[in-house]
Image (cartoon, rainbow, N blue to C red; front, side, top):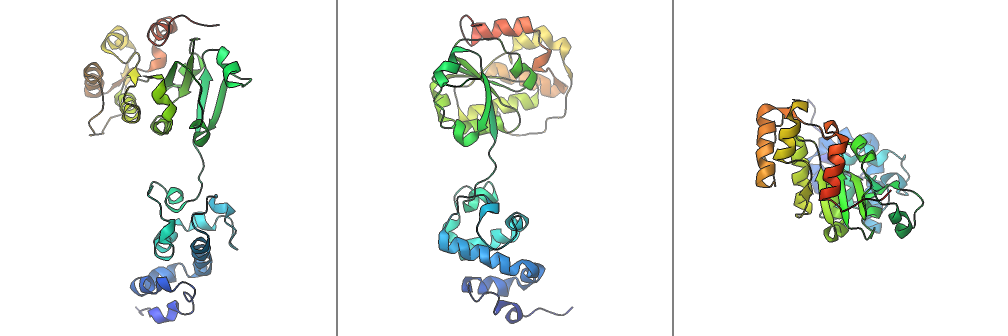
Length: 285
């Protein structure tokens, strides 16, 4: 196989980014692999070198490349940008966007007001809404309690409770709630399925807000409705969960038996009474 000379590809291709000469000499085949995109890659690097962290979506970067160019070339740009523009590299390495200062699609957090008087307090004409995470961070709802719910139908059928907001915490939402610092000023509850994944979500939420209280994930509720349990997907995580002794006991049972007691299987009369007793006193209509 014919070897590739670094001289053949380093000049004039990196004449405006001499910082890359060493990288090109070490990885000439990477340049060959991306030969058709090389000019665009250098334009992106040069723009960020001149302008710093961009604070825009990748498709908005005013560089003469097609709008999906950066998205297609995240891998190679992740190698080039730290060399050409080290000042653009942030501490958050979670995604390409957070690492290099681009905006990214925000998680939408879905809220439901369980007290209709909160509509007036928040100056909004609706009881249910979804907003991006970065806007949810700015909320100051002045509520007494927040109830995070795993199941959507359960979220939609919650009873009225004074001074309480519900958040649908499915998927990654529960983990992202750590960014909502105002949750530290309210009583925070989580109600999820009783299986390995439900208790794991509770633990994740508690890692961000240590005073999280679980609702109906206890031994009494499990014993009362255990006959509604069904086979569950295997739970393989080896991470030690942040659970109370009672939660830990139920967790070990459902994982050992590989079963799932879904929250929507519990009778509504039972759950409404538990929620009103545990989360608030009285109710509103």
